[in-house]
Structures are given as structure tokens and as C-alpha cells.
Image (cartoon, rainbow, N blue to C red; front, side, top):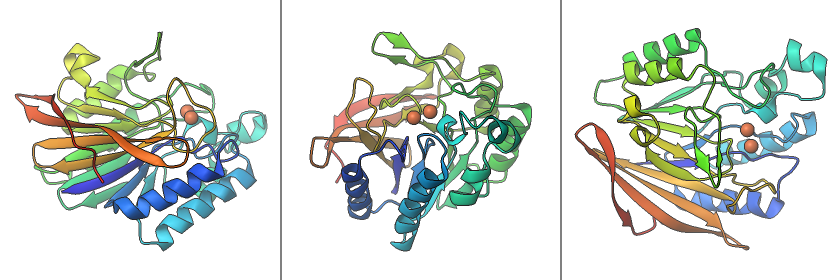
Length: 277
Ligand SMILES: [Fe+2]
Ligand SMILES: [Fe+2]
């Protein structure tokens, strides 16, 4: 089994220290093979906010965790216009990760991150032709049987959250081609501050066969119709179990463990399993 701890939308600068401490503790208890952080490390891309995010990452790494992250729209400066257009991700690269397309191979599982944050479309995300080619090239070098995971900040699909429907990523057609050509099995994203998982075929007819996993915000004080949460994702051949760990006021508690089985080209929700510990 491969276990991934999926965190998102930490928003240092608009975070709650108690939740940061609890995430730290949970990371050690849950013993993931990899921690994925799908963007929005900071609230306003300020240096002191990146320093706090960097200290959090250093702590995880010092305790032996492997971490893969991608930037979010909040990691691009909003008000500092010069910096926003001339060097939008300079602080991210200095404090979080110099690469914007991190790639890690675990036994049987390949994980690639892609940057969807842009200076011009501040809130909305985008993907471009070069990134599509890079996704295909990278995954084509992995063994055909490996489980392929693509990480972005922005969801590739329009998601329904309460009564609202979020916008899909810019140039969604390109993204759909990329995941289809590359045999991507799972998409991890954040941005919506709302935890949900489903087969992509439920969202876009032509895109069945990829499991879409959204993480809530792990540590931000800004929530949307849901408490703060993070996911554990347990992968064994032919199935994946996603457990949402939600904040219950003093700690995170595992709930909603959903097991999906691969059946005839789609991910089918088989049953709600016992929460992972
Ligand atoms: Fe966010
Ligand atoms: Fe975001």
C-alpha cells in the first residue's frame, strides 16, 4: 500500500496555529509515504508568510517526510503589481521549491505537480500547451503499470459546492487531452476549500476513468460550508481509499473513508470503509 497525505490551502498569514500543530502531529501519526500540498501556501505571498510556510515544510522534512508542492493563486502577489508581473513566483521558488513541476516516483506510484497559478488571471487557473507536453513526456517515462497522479492547485473540472458551481480550469480541453494521453489515474487539487472525491465521468462525460480528489483547507481560518480538513489516500492495486480528516474543534478526526474500485474503465465507489488511522 502507498499512503499519501494530501494537504492544501495552508494560507500562512490567515492560518490558525492550533491547526498547524495538529497537522504536524497527524502527519507523524499517519506515516505517509509522501505529503502532497496542492497550493495556497500563503495568504498574500508576503515574505514573512512564506517564511512561516518554509518553517512548516522544514519541520516535516526534518522529521523524515517527503513533500511535493505546487503553487496556488495566493502564492502570487496580488497588490505588489511589479512583482506580480515581473517575478510572480520568485518568493515561492526561494522559500518553497525552486521547481514548479516537481516529480516523485514511489514504488508503483508516480506523482507530478503542475503550476496552474497565473499573474493575469489572478483567481482562475490555467494550463498551457508546454505543460500538456511535459505531463505526457514525464508519465511516458514511468512503467506502464504505475499509478499516475497529477497535482494542481486549481481543479481541472467545474465542481459544485453548495449552490455554486466553481469554474473549470482555463483551457480545460487541453487538460483533458493531457490526462487521457498520459493515462493519469488520479487528480489532486485544492483551491475550493471543500473536500470531495468522485470519478471524473460524473463531471465531464468524456473524462471517465480518473479519480478526482479535492482537499479542503488544512489550516486556514477561511472555510466554505465545511470545517478544515485534509485527506489520506491509500492506494493498493485496483483500488484507492480516500479518508477525510476533519477539524472537530481540538483535533482532526477521520471520517468519510470512501473506497473506490477500478471497474471497466471507471472508478466506482464501492463502500464507505472504516476510517483510516
Ligand atoms: Fe485557498
Ligand atoms: Fe486558491
